[in-house]
Length: 314
Image 1 (cartoon, rainbow, N blue to C red):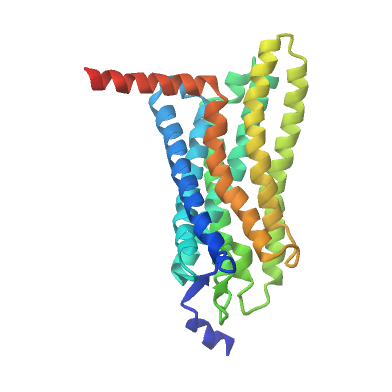
Image 2 (image 1 turned 90 degrees about the vertical axis):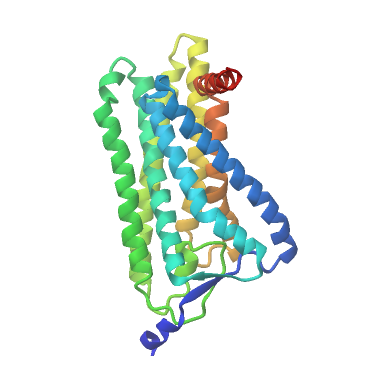
């Protein structure tokens, strides 16, 4: 009977914060502003790095890829989230839910590995500066970037296909703001134990392992910074690494709490807030952290601005 009934679920209903309608109205305005700032901030980083040849080095090319991921991440989640917040019960088709989950996993998985690659880049630059041109040459950079994107695609393909291979025979209400794996899986009319084992193992490999490697890299980086004779050099190295570590902690911390939690670990509202932390705040903060705390990015932005002003006055 379950197999026959699964065809009746052709769409899902995203509940959002429907239990708090007055909160939804306020959040709509806040999230719209965050979305526009996120798009603008990441777009500026992409344009500045693309146009300024002096920034065509691994550190900034990694940042360019990160901005592409964050911009795409927001574009996949935020428009649908704004629809959810503007209506009492927003409907999303089966296919659209599949697509949204796929791209959330793709960009989320890619960001996990990109952040790891960026930590390795900083480790190589600070701890082994003389060997850095050989350690992080163009070939190594391209391999790390390709590995990050291909890994994200593989994670998304396997996990999304598996989730939507389960029968969905009702109810069809997803108590969440978007089609994320844990809340969608709760609606499956089948035994999902094997998938949950896979998902837990996958999360350890995709989230925890890169996170631990990043922490080890930064322990080595901190040790190398403390040995620097120049106070200015120490401050510059601390500034560069602090911005990356802030972003890493926010992203990995909230992602871990979302995907490694037991089913009954948190209330649905708490789960929504944790998901918002890494899907909403990380793409917003990355461009602010990297651009405002980085003198070379600020110089490149001012150079681009002066060029634009000059062209308009000529």
